[in-house]
Amino acid sequence: MGSSERTVFENPVVEWIDSRLPVFTMMQKEYGVFPTPKNFNYLWNFGAIAMFMLVTMIVTGIVLAMHYTADVTQSFDAVERIMRDVNGGWLLRYMHSNGGSFFFIAVYIHIFRGMYYGSYKQPRELLWILGVVIFILMMATAFIGYVLPWGQMSLWGATVITNLFSAIPLVGDSIVTLLWGGFSVDNPTLTRFFALHYLLPFVIFAVVFLHIWALHVTGSNNPLGLEPKTEKDTLPFHPYYTMKDSFGVVVFLLLYAYVVFFAPNMLGHPDNYIPANSLVTPAHIVPEWYFLPFYAMLRAITFDIGIPFTDIVIISAKLGGVITMFGSLLLWLVLPWLDTHPLRSARFRPLYKKLLILLVLDFIFLGYVGSQAADATLLGIPLSVFGLIATGLYFAYFIVILPWLSKNEKGRELPASIHEAVLAKNKK
Ligand code: HEM
Image (cartoon, rainbow, N blue to C red; front, top):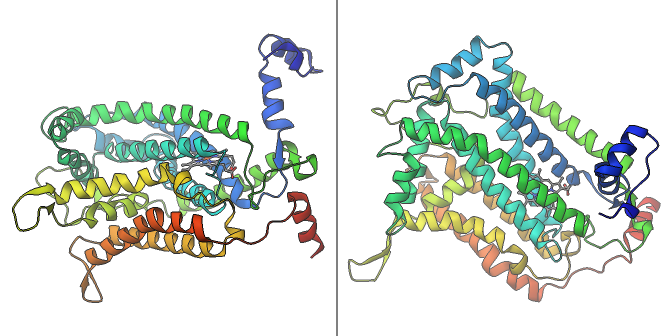
């Protein structure tokens, strides 16, 4: 950045620093005067809320790590000691374990907001892709973190999920051995998971930095999906959105605090208060709620795919499940090229809006399927049948419906500008 672009600050200390390293100029440009569409609704708070949760997770996690020991003979007790003997340890732990859930709540809302308003469309494709990378990293971090207390669900969840990699042809078994650091989930697994659980949040932080950088290159989308044209369409980020984001964070914090203080085990599984025991498999292994829709897709494929009338299996049920689960996320990566409709916001695409709501309901239903035992039934029919149908609908939405809508949906007429739409709304 050339010195000519620098802001001159009155405070001599700030000015001294800024003339040598223009961080204040950068903040002023990106968070002070940054032109931001003036019509944001509260759904635009969730990026800031996610950021707040990421920082909360890192801070509470680092202090927890000061009291934790990664060793299969000690981890369970170390966590109990944090809960009972470390000053404020119970609060740290409940903030961290429930913080994971609230981080996912914020990010799920953030993602579906992006889908509803078409925020992934040109020119924000890379911003979106970086978001999906963050989401995948978050899932990896949360999964690994859940293993650390070394309870029954830690051990068995880790066993089920790491075993999936063995379905990959040729290299699968080697990958599993590498993940485990041996031939079963044991001490080397726990130690490497702890190392990675400490590392990954910082990787996420770095990708979030790129995510926000990309956002500040294109500027934000908004509920109308129109690009701002004149100064009348925007407001400076500060004080308008610093205030609105702070308000959103505080409201979210109230809900988070309610769960931390009054229902801290509501979202957890009681089996994880039983020390890990490799000789006793829990009757029903379930992941944390935020994985459930993907877990349902993993379990949806219960049959081998092969050449008919022969015994030749090309894709085993296990591999099919793995491909389906990872495929469901890969679809998000290519979403900007599946939905190429020229209009962004669902407000002007009535059919898209209905079908997206259907997708969200389908996703929630998949979550329900994932939460139930593999042999559960619904209305006398095996739940796995519903799981397969819901998975089919999920894929059809992305692969068939979105491209079809892109070509055939006639949208509503757009307002002339953000400014005019806001004025018209205020008049009403
Ligand atoms: C640690 C997780 C994340 C953080 C801290 C984060 C942060 C942010 C922030 C601060 C914004 C600007 C404010 C806003 O629009 O809400 C933003 C925008 C955006 N994020 Fe994220 N994000 C995260 C995860 C994700 C994920 C997982 C996705 C998608 C899969 C995503 C997609 C987007 C998109 C498309 C925008 C632009 C929205 C618009 O302008 O309408 N983000 N993000």
